[in-house]
Length: 227
Image (tube, rainbow, N blue to C red):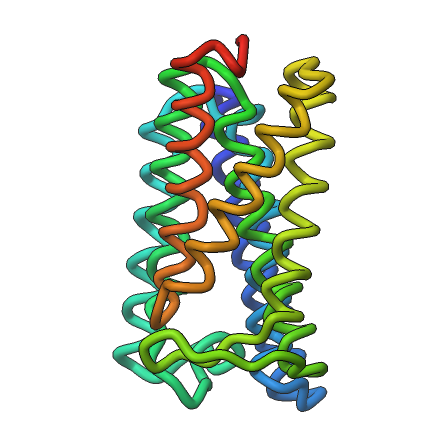
């Protein structure tokens, strides 16, 4: 069997095991949905980091993302996957996640540079849940945008973690250094933080990576990011 196809099955099994473990946490060990949801959010991001390495074709990524989009959509309609869906607010975040992963894969394939996948997805996987967890546990500096309440602490945690992720990956994967490294890392962190702050109903799962990809593409266009 083609190794990429075999890898697709392995990755699909990994996602199913992830959903199963989240359901076990929620139903058997009574872990709150907000926690199990963040666990799935983070672990999904980690697993998807393998996509550019293990999957050679965007069609295989589309197959994976499309399958899980269908599963997540049906779970909402049939009131299943309570570890993800049992929240007291309207959110489309879980549905948007596989869509933006596929989009990020297409972008990194176009530029032939993993950085276009890893920075947006890692900021989404790490910075977003960190901001939510810190913001809820220590609701310092509450502010409201439209109808969504945020906290200055949560936004600060998001900014700091996004900055460190960008800084580390730009150094490691691109070899960027000096003022350009600092400037691009700050711009990425600020842009993604702003998109998280103003997004409603889980649409930050879409806006955060898109802003990250757009900023990286612009940096490449003006030769700030040399790939």
